[in-house]
Length: 191
Image (tube, rainbow, N blue to C red; front, side, top):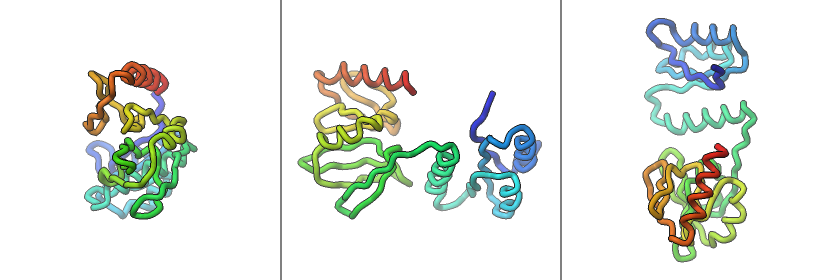
């Protein structure tokens, strides 16, 4: 079995994370290693073993650190994360389309539901018609007149609704149900 990324705790029972990383490095320089630890004092060892990142347990900003870590891993794998700049009420913000769950249209306002440290909602004015064309190549699907959804976050399509991975349920009108179901099955096959 080939691994791409290995998360290692420095403090493990039988063999510590540093010794495990040394054994991994004897086999491969390509495997990406992330150390998860409560101790900062292992950073020199991490550099020697070419660790991608350190994740500090108990860090108040742990979720944002994990997000940064995943971005670093994606960079190392040459996996490009599509980002797009939007003009929100609170100002211009460049967002990762990977973290955009869905966009809801509500009385000429567009609400962007984005997974950051917590679920955030950013608002702008516009129409879904324009965004539907722009985001189609990034895996977004129009399931309803009011919803444009990132298929990556669709867990299931059933009984005239989509269920997202975070538990949110969005309705699908009967006329679009078959199309959305077929697109979901196609997308799952590609993934």
